[in-house]
Image 1 (cartoon, rainbow, N blue to C red):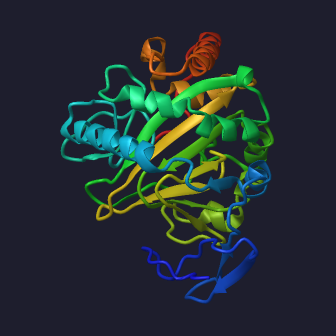
Image 2: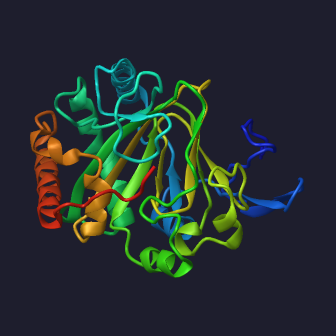
Length: 330
């Protein structure tokens, strides 16, 4: 077990590295003690149990070899287009939530719409999004069959030109929500599987295990929005080809180091039981502007039929939801 990992935090951050160890460690420092969690290594089964318990689950090496290299090459080309302004659908440094507009002086921290047919290399990303490697895990997590899956988002998160951090948040619950309002929302089914799929090493996602099942504590509620350390927080460490699925209403933040290259595919797949609330999470990103043009020609026959049906469910969800607005501001 090697708990000492280099991080931007004032003490070592712990990651899981043994399948037999689950323990707590209290770090003594100025102010209240901080309890960090040593998570067990990911098992080959039980993804759903881990997600339900912790609010996230990591699956190692779902893509390797030539397929990983192909995704890397395509992603680097897209990153270059985003940084130069040749692809306008980006995430602007300094703004956490949509909508975003390109600003050369601020730079980017993400690229949107990887399946848009106007984007060079879109077919590589579309093939990966609808791959069995990802959707087999999604079906397990959502406890559903192919005929209940809904096409959602596929974007990319990259190294910013300057250090950039996201504030602590839940994706679809505002910070002003009371404890009762938090629990009312957290008590509903998620109807989605959201993930970070790392093409290179990634230590950017910071979260608090179990916080998807409870309201914020007084410490969490009163903390600075950019507080570097909260009790029991965990940095999710991904290697190339690893994927982390997480409940998007777990209490989490992103910490992006401008000195470390990062290319991580950020996607979500929905369940047909979703409502206007889920539609808002998806459609606020502008996918409705091109969803009918997404090219499935490079998919196998079975994958193509599944993809067509997933797209049809998204279109139906959008048509029934009307103007969905934005989940959060800032």
